[in-house]
Length: 262
Image (cartoon, rainbow, N blue to C red; front, side, top):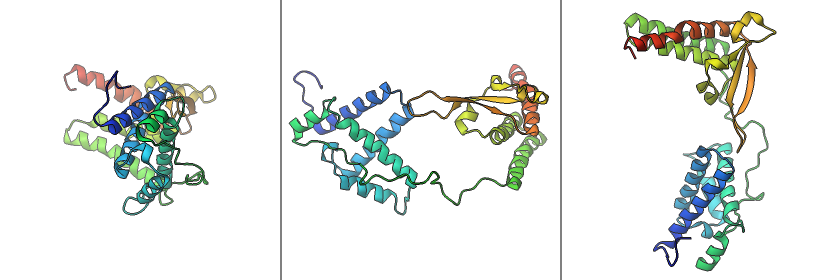
């Protein structure tokens, strides 16, 4: 593993790094997102620092105490976050003890210890409700939405009145906030929209080219490509917002750039 006749001075640390590297390769073969692989490895390294021991020395009590600490003041992480941590650790343990890989054999030979799966139905956080968010969080009321949109619109006029740059960006942001609300978009979905995603709805010809929105980068299932979906336009005012931005405001970006305005 480390080369013919090579034995690292710090075998425990070198083996730990090798296990994580192998785990990254396994997850890459499953086409998991880079952010998923990075976050999982970071979590395992945090747990190793917390315990001060190596994976083949970890105990179920270590996991329980760590998660209890994270769920208590002052950190008080949410139940869904803690369940995600458990899932990442469980996935790491599954890889570590998989007999198709060399880690169990190496641990037994070098340290006389056999790593085990430390998270099962006896200490796993159960998912018993569909919604586990903070009950104090709620959607904006209609009045609050009007205030938000009015504020966004006011930023455009304010920058123009002061003769400052940024009025186009302010208009873009206002149009984006309204589009997110009108079509029920996630942040990633909204950030990766293009004008080519707009289309017609045969049942609402009055909406013109703004009758549907094709979401190409919807939230993906684990290991799969982004899910695509089409969302029908519901609000007539959203057509006006998109039409004004796409046909009147967006072309000004190219005009300003050609004039040396950035």
